Length: 247
Ligand SMILES: Nc1ncnc2c1ncn2[C@@H]1O[C@H](COP(=O)(O)OP(=O)(O)OP(=O)(O)O)[C@@H](O)[C@H]1O
Image 1 (cartoon, rainbow, N blue to C red):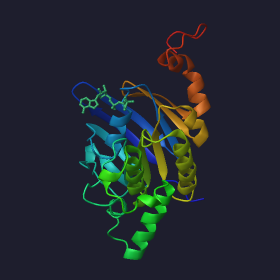
Image 2: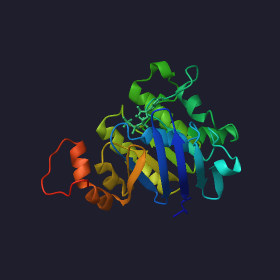
Image 3: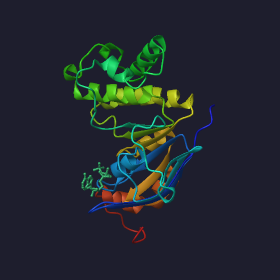
Image 4: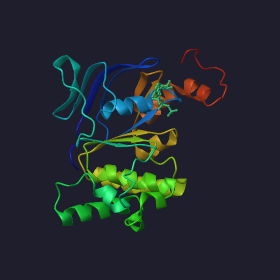
């Protein structure tokens, strides 16, 4: 099994009304980023993708320094090392799905690029969408093509911000099962925002629990979820008696 790169981050990010202060290491193949709405999950992913600059801190991925504010190294959006798949698919409107997926692969020879595009479209159950223009795709199809475009570049870390929100459960599970195998054969990490905590068990993932821009816990799903049980149940609106206050 290929070695997984380690991501090591210690960053602060101050925005007008919200701040992130996060210090964590990703060394599991899959990590699920879990927390209530507004906790800062998307903001953290955007910072890791270089779409927001940390106010201070550093981010290392394997041997690469992505950001080190003390050394004047700033995050670079669009790095080949980092792939970001978002809930809102951002496709080039004038390019068919296949060309959208192959867009970032100019360095590959034509036949290699073609094979890569077909491979990742198959992964997202979207081979039949190859010739389709974005305005002829449904919301879920656009999400799948957008995910395929992120996968096609084979980044070292895959940031997945609810990339299946417009896709039905049966299809999501089918794609996720294939994605698990695909990732396992590559030197690639995945940080996956999900509101469905059961997915962490399904993926055999670590969990990072985030609230108000702070990381409350990280570790195997059962450990983190057990130690924050009362808090998580409260967020789901379930009242529990007998749990320690402030847990
Ligand atoms: N463009 C923005 N301008 C100002 N504040 C923002 C912006 N985007 C997000 N925020 C605020 O930053 C905080 C964190 O938002 P973020 O989208 O990271 O949360 P989240 O955990 O991803 O939430 P959700 O699960 O609802 O998607 C929230 O208080 C949000 O209102």
